[in-house]
Image 1 (cartoon, rainbow, N blue to C red):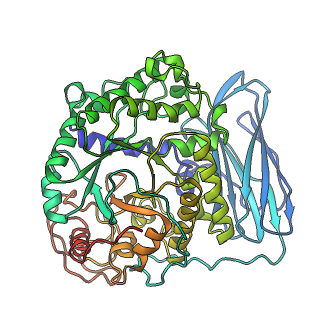
Image 2: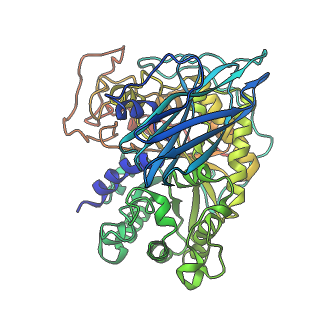
Image 3: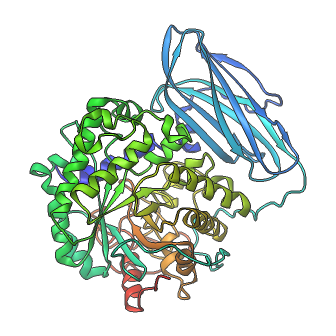
Length: 564
């Protein structure tokens, strides 16, 4: 078994956590008639499922919050389903989503699901509701016009988003105001803004030589009780020891993205039954303990453990009160966890307990999912005041966990905009403009100021719109994040993120087929005909034409940006 390849493959399962993209939903319901012309809210019954919804208030005179109540029932004796609520604006653009997976229903039982939707601007919004088999399986029923929300008044509308087929990084500088005071850096963190990237075992020396980066990351995945988890990739968890050792030898800080709960049994793609299963959580915390013991052997060497990407956003959406989310912690009988509550608060605190006991050199990183609030600012394009409110809302959830995290990881997207456009058919909706970057820094700044924790941007897509190798084919998809961050000679874009509280950028693809700063395609140096002005001849066999490595080298040769 190739651990690195297995870990990359496991990242595809992240779709089970995040809200389903509109394009994936479209793929699911191909062949199912979905009406598009309702003018009034409807109640529908299909395949034994009945769906109705209401909004309170249904009419607002200014931008605000509407409580969407969705009522679902089934005539089946008993069933389990995923309930999905989606909100779109007058143009059909998705501006809000919420889902509840693996929900149990009894015959003729009516259940209500509540979603607080923050209206991004004036206009009329249509609420749609779908019922699927668990884990986005078969579509059972679809209500295309469950209810509507109308926002009147003269509230300001944010700038319209221009969706390019592919475009070079814009030159407009985000307008995020510098923070008057930023929180302290994590212990032993560099005093300059550092770059890093995903890197498989045995690649540390070559990575340092070719880029000069100070960080590299690797998934720890596969499940804690499946026989295929990271602890079995090499005997007795030595995979982690070996990765740390070679990182240290190359002068690079190792980062591990611990992504275990989703692939464990019995959930096998659904986190909820795993978190509430005592046997699973006993294996889970013993797996965490094993990692801490391996990392703690490198006393005095900083090791970063990025705790469960996407899980915290998933839990936040399930219930904004983490004490009401069932997680087996103290009940596992593990002595170090005695006295911790059996809920999501206990889960967060357990990582701190095990770290403090076995590996004080480990920095714990919380994962901030922007969609965890129920509003994805990349989709809804809200006003600055709404963005700041959402940042504070995300901070409030983080603080309610009372964990011992040292820093926070967040992300732009886990694959290239060109990938989503070509593979998912999203019509270019994933391309970011200057306004999107500005909203992103504003959201992060609001979170940082409220929590006192700095941020690392993680798993940043590696595509570009400059090199001829980037022709939107498998492994060669375009994006503009690398250009926005590293092709700006003024460094204004980097400084906007630094002032927001960002202390590092880690680049890497989140799925096979997305662009790699390596020859993942195995096709050598390529220079196909330009498709949109990407006229630069490839510098190497890297699938991005060598652009990323050349820009990282330039960044370090010009001097790394100082962190305030």
